[in-house]
Length: 156
Image (cartoon, rainbow, N blue to C red; front, side):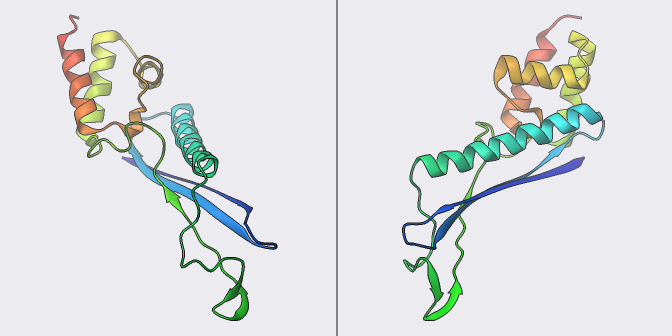
């Protein structure tokens, strides 16, 4: 498996003069070893876009950064700036739905898609995204199991 790590952060002006608030989201996912270059780039791009959306959503919803109520300049009385961070899960709807799919599930799913529907790994990823709103690299165990069952019901 290949691990993909994506991170996105943004600073916005804070409530006090010369202060700012940081919003941040990061995620790490595993993808199949046999994923090709363009599909790998697309998976990382989709992950990064999910993280950017999560940060944008945090800011739009008015979430405030964590901390102890002291904002702006000052480190308990000194002149150092305090930086706070808020972390969010990716907005991918699969990210919060149980354990991630196993390597074997993803590999078997790709093999079934190739055998039953003549889809390449990239075509399978595109089909999942277009038809089901799923990201191959972020499938949960239950989603993978359901898709495997569906492909197994398909006649050759």
